[in-house]
Length: 82
Image (tube, rainbow, N blue to C red; front, top):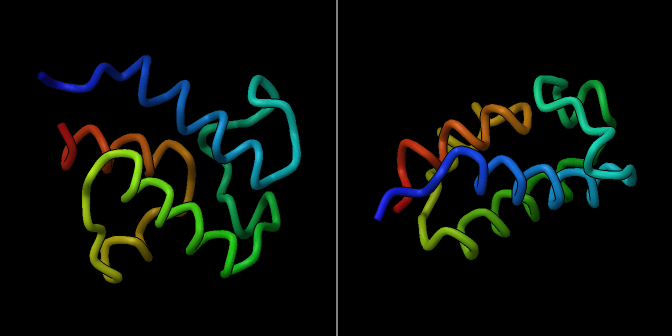
């Protein structure tokens, strides 16, 4: 069964907002997590690992480097999981 955009968006919003330290509804999905929200490289790696665990996928390093915003993460998951 395919994942719904709404469900993935809600889940990524909650996880990313936790890393950023804000409420989920305050998260701008298009802002760059590292450059605009200031998460560290380690936090970005942890976020990728959370995505892999949650969605049962393996994200190659070269693809992980392209995930700059929450919206990028949502699109990657919708394309590659489920």
